[in-house]
Length: 339
Image 1 (cartoon, rainbow, N blue to C red):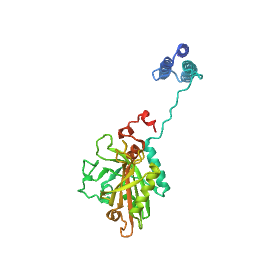
Image 2: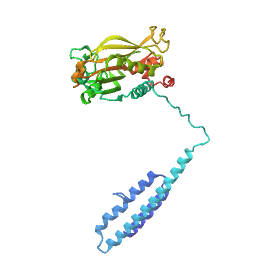
Image 3: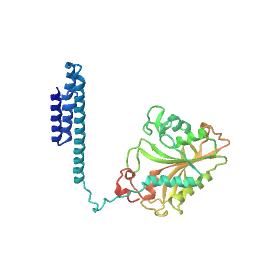
């Protein structure tokens, strides 16, 4: 058996030397040291040996195993070094070659408008507040004085997840949540995505961005609302911008109005951007309806407030002269580079 062990060791070393890749080397390892390897077979046959022979043969087997393992490790290290050397030779980098041009992008128009609006209202002492996009109907409608039979609650206008859970159709639910948990005075803006069941075209999208504002305090009047929106319009669209109110109806404000701004392209003379009207529709606004205050736990006999809201895409399209909303979502670098 001693001769057998020596023969196995000699054969293993010869095969290790001849191995020219890691796969063949691994096959050698399995052949001699694996569970069914030749040295393992010798160990299993030691039961037939006398008690005196077993320790001698066991020692020889262990010595042979150690030598074979050592030879395999050395050969493996050698083969890996050769592989690395070959790889480095093939992947040489010519440091004299010019590098790839790194093109920097620009801030997306929607992001630019949101950041600008935040900066304006933070300067006016407002707080920026966020809320869930998947909203309870009680906050999206009921607390905002929108009864169950109101057209805005129809399935053709609103995305329903369940009868009581919707994708918010405006950021007004954030206002309701703040009024419910915070005592006046309240001065907040609420930017974020909103969802409405609109077909995609040049001026509509089922997903768009909105910013709403809310002020609640004692003795708040319509003149405070007009002054705030004039300040916002001048800072956002230019110092010469004028603003006008047109009567309108919103269930959560009374009185309500649509606010237009003078066209900052033609200065009110009429052009393609303002559709030759001299004015651009900007946002909806009004005094917070007493029912909304009461629904949110605020006494309308003590406090009053105003609210406003506008689509960010509409501001971006007006400010940058974009005539198709879909361009804002296509991520075409050629388009975005303009801004």
